[in-house]
Length: 433
Image (tube, rainbow, N blue to C red):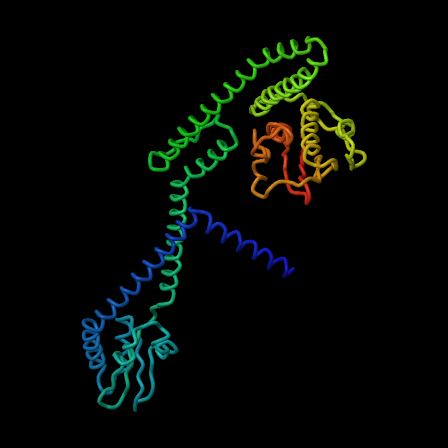
C-alpha cells in the first residue's frame, strides 16, 4: 500500500512539474503568488521596523511615565484596595511581592513570561517598579487575549491571499484563452482542415495573432486548392491523348522492325497511364470527404491472393474476422506495398497479418539495403524517392507509399515505415470501425 502511495505522489509531482514548465498560465500564477508573498513580507517587516522605532522614540517614555504614575497611586506600601480599583477601571493585571506578602489580581495570568505573550522585549523592565518599602509591583494586561486575534488575522490574511490567487488565475486564464484556440486551430491547419478558422475573441496582440494565422491559413489553402485543381486538370486532359496514342501503337503492324519500337512505347504509355491514375486516386483520397465503399472483406484471403510472387513468405494468424474495408483501395495498398518490397527487397518478402489491440495489423518487410536515417520521414511523401537521380530501374515516381498512407488514413488507420535491419518494414494498422 505504501508503495502505491509513493508512486501516486511521484506521478502527482511529475504532473505538477510538467504543468509549471510547459504552461504559461501556471507560470504567471506562480509569479503572482511569489510577488504577493514577497510584497507581504516586505510590508510586514517594514511596518514592524517602523513601529519598533516609533515605540522606542515616542511611546516608550510616555508609557514609562504612566507606569510611574500608576504605581505611585497605589501608595507605599501598595494598597490592595487601590490595586483592585485600578484593575476594575483599567484592563490591567497587578502582581505585588514584598514585605506585606504576595498578591495578584489575575492568578496564573500575570505571572506568565512576557516574551510568551507576544509583547515587546522592553516590556518586562518597563512595567515593573519597586516601591519605597521594597515591594515589587508588576503590571500586565488583564483578560485581553492576544493569541485569538492574532490567529484570526493570520487565517484571514491567508484566506485573502488564496482568494486573490484564485482571482488572478481566473483572470490569467481568461487572458490566455486565445492561446488555446490558436493551438487547436494550428493543429487543424496542420492536418489539412481549413474549414474552421481560429475564433478572434480579443482585440489585443493575441487577437491580432489569430487574425494573421487565419489569413496565412486562407492563403495556404488557396494555393493548395489551385495546385490540386491544376494537377487534376492536367491529369484529365492527358488521359485522352494517352489512350489514343496507346490505341495507335497497338494498331501498328507486327513486323520485326516495328516490334522493337512498339513494346518499349507501350510500356512507357502504360507507365504514364498508371501515373495519371495514381495522381487522380491520390487527390480523391486526400480530400476530407473521401468516399469509401466499405464491405466485409476477408483480408487474409486477399493477402494470400495478391502475395504470390516467388520468395514471398506469408505469416497470417488463423481465424481472422471479416473486416469492413474498401476492397478496391485495399488491393491498391497491397499492390503498392508488395511492389515496393519486390523492387527493393532483393527477392525475399515477409508478409504478416494479425489482430493487435482490437484491430488488424499488416506488415510487409523486405530484406534489401534499406534507406538512410534522414529519409524515413519523407518516404511516404508524394513524389519523394530515396534515389535522387530517379532512374527507371530504381523504382516508380514516388507515389506508391504516399497512396498507401492515404488509403490507411481513409480507413481510420495509419502507415508506419521503420527499419528492419536489414531492409524496410511497412506497418499498416487498421482499427475497429
